[in-house]
Length: 391
Image (tube, rainbow, N blue to C red; front, side, top):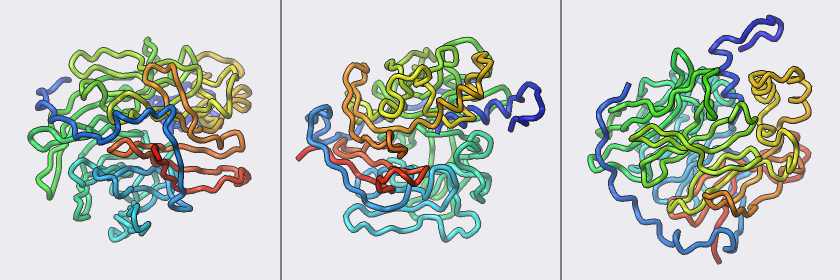
């Protein structure tokens, strides 16, 4: 952490920790060719800009939802800022079970994801003993694999920051491609690997660096946070902040060439996952809470994050600007992946609530998200929600 009284230049670790405050992120042998993606029934038939949309609160608590491969369950955590046990809800019965409580003092996760084979990928503090989450992700979290039988998680011996891109289907050899951001001695690296398992244990194979961020380096993209494999698995889409432009955007990196490019542009702070057929994105943005402010490209970050970005940009009044232009909440939108058309699905942020941590179901018919109320004054019911497209 930067000592506010030191007056000195922040260390690399401090700068990386500041990067984590903004969220919520040598070549090896080539991976096997991806298996054909599983069919997403009805996805291509849905016009998400016009289709009927209804939402239902399924729990009055919970955050960071993630869909099971069959779309019948959701894994989630208690909060997005404090480590907790991992839970799972059956969407038909609404019954909740704890996935990690039996591990006692080593039950705490920061994030949990389903893998295509029904096993789990976990981000957690060392030993899953808690003390991570939120702004501490970049300094603390590591990757773990847990079997669907809920045997004790296995360390994958890698640091991690933020969200993780997971291929929708396995490779022909049963391994699964993942991409994630991890600390290095010089900055943050967007890495890719094959997650290999025999059902009892797991390891990362063919690890490679896709994008290397070093604080202060030239270029439009800064630290990366992996979101999705796109372009039929040929690219990894990641979220970043354009330090010079004071804007948060979605970028992608071509796995083969390492070429980096912007996915689409918007003046607002946006973070986006793709629908299965990649025609549309599920976007979280501060359009309603900060529609035309001069710093709307970064104002959804918490105050320390905004202040740090402004200091990187050389703003002398960073603290004052950040105080007035931070914490602007998200709503959820559907957006075409060229960025030209958008539809609002929620409208809670002007009241102080936050609709976030959104994710698309495997068949593309539903989304899951959380509503949080940091002030407790918005009047919007908090908890986990399911949104459904179609009649």
